[in-house]
Structure formats: C-alpha cells, structure tokens
Length: 309
Ligand SMILES: NC(=O)c1ccc[n+]([C@@H]2O[C@H](COP(=O)([O-])OP(=O)(O)OC[C@H]3O[C@@H](n4cnc5c(N)ncnc54)[C@H](OP(=O)(O)O)[C@@H]3O)[C@@H](O)[C@H]2O)c1
Image (cartoon, rainbow, N blue to C red; front, side, top):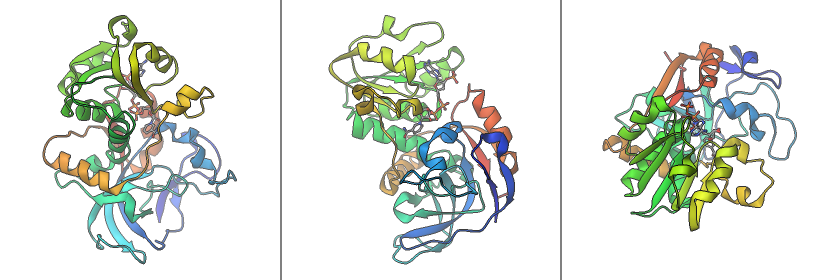
C-alpha cells in the first residue's frame, strides 16, 4: 500500500512516500481504508513513535498520525457494532503504525461512526483534540456549571474544543490567545480573552477554580498562582510529560482512545453544538510541507492530510 513513512529515527524532512506492506486486523480490530488523517508536529518527540511498550526500538518503516476518518475495509474476529463499508473516525494505538497510509488497523473500541455532518477531512482532525478536551474537562478537572476555567492556547487544535465544551458546560471561560486570534476565540464562547503576547495572564486573572494548560513550560508554572485553594489544573503539553516535579506529573494527562466518547462528540457535532476547524489540507504526498506549515504556528485548528482523492 502507499504510505508516508520513516526508515530511520529522524525529523519530518526524512519522511518518504513509497510502498509498504498492508496491515491486517487481528481479533477485536478493524482494518480502515483511510480517507484522511491529521498531523501533530510533536509526534516526533513522543516515546511510542520510536519505542515499543518495553522500551526497545520499534522496527521501521514507521508510519505517523494516529487519528483518521475512513471506511471499514475488513473486521477481525469478535468485532460487533460495525460493518464493512461503514464510515468511521477514531484513533489507533500509539505504538503501532499510524494513518499516513492507505490502510491502518485500530481496535474497534477506539472507533465511532463518523459525524454525518462532517466530511472525512473535518472528521479526521477531530478525534485526538476533541477527546483530549473532553477527558481533560470532564474526567480530570470535573468542571462544574458556574465554575471558572482558564484555558491556555484557546485557538489551538485542542483549545478550540476546550473553549466550546467549557462554555456549553456553563463555566465562566477565560482563554489566552495571540492577538490575531482573540476575536476567533470569543466566537467559540470565551467570556474573556487575554492576549498572551502583550499581557501577563496572572496580572488580570486570580482565584480560578480550574486551569486547562495546552502550552506548558513557563505558562504552566505561572498558572499555579492563579488557582484558588482547592483548584484543579490539567496540563496536556508534551513537555509536561517528562516533568520531574510531582505536582506537574499529577496534573499531566495523556489522551486515550474511547469510541463511546467519540460517539457523544459526533452527536454534539451533528446537533450543531460543536464546531470543527481545519487549519489546512495537504495531499498525502505533501506531508513534509504540512509539517513545515504546522511548525510555523498561528493556526486555527489542525492540519489534515488527504489520503484518498
Ligand atoms: N497529552 C495529550 O494527550 C495531548 C493531546 C493533544 C495534544 N497534546 C499537546 O498539547 C499541546 C497543544 O496541542 P494542540 O494540538 O492544541 O497545539 P496547537 O494547535 O499548536 O495549539 C497551541 C496553541 O497555543 C497557543 N500558544 C502558544 N504559546 C502560547 C502562550 N504562551 N500562551 C497561550 N497560548 C499560547 C498557540 O497560539 P499561536 O499559534 O497563535 O501563537 C496555539 O493556538 C501540544 O504540546 C500537543 O503536543 C497533548
């Protein structure tokens, strides 16, 4: 099958377009004919990208991008709830080959039927960001109606979902964004937007019940002081994963695949209650250029790769 892959441990300039063997579904898995996927520039720094769960090097070729929208091409034994030919969106395992390819395999529990109101490009940029927002807000922060939430990176791929879901939950939403994105973040439901390039958020925000940090580093460290006593903070920033201080380790969350939550997200999208933002679309063969664009930032949403023309 046609794929974009790495044949050595390196950055996005080393991505190769070529043919690699097609995977086949094992028990409990589905084979997906990928229509579209989405990229995450930080994936080159993730542990599972180049290592097995036991820490040994993963074999090459390695295929990136673990979220997708496509159709079911085949089902492994024991899968119920899906049929060949149905349109689905979802995630596959971080330690296996991803979706920058004509086919990938995924556990059936990590899939949902695709939102009907979205095309495959819009659907492909949704799983990781929407699930991260969902799990951060509802599982980790347990955000309640009437509580305040400070969201760092409100215009980002995850941030756009966090702002919308927090607003719908009846929270008072304060988001940070670059000056060019402030109006955009207001349209998503933020009650207050802080221009992070010109204002120190701690000068204007105090005593919030919750913080959702999508930025990390100095932004994360300065956030502890704006929490009220008993307040909760979640950080998803990749650099927080390797933190040595216990407070940051406890606050870090790694998204997990969850087909049931994807179904709830699809229902919100189809009801017009959750908007999806595609920051750009590149053909599969243009993957290197897609990463170049993503690294420049100033995006609203995520960059998709069109796998099936
Ligand atoms: N732990 C997990 O499970 C998980 C899941 C998904 C993502 N992540 C990670 O979470 C982070 C965010 O992901 P993403 O996909 O949303 O990235 P993204 O689309 O690049 O969004 C990041 C946003 O942060 C903004 N920003 C940059 N510096 C900022 C600052 N100092 N203060 C406030 N906002 C700032 C950027 O705005 P401008 O571009 O306008 O400057 C951008 O809108 C990444 O590190 C990603 O790898 C982790």
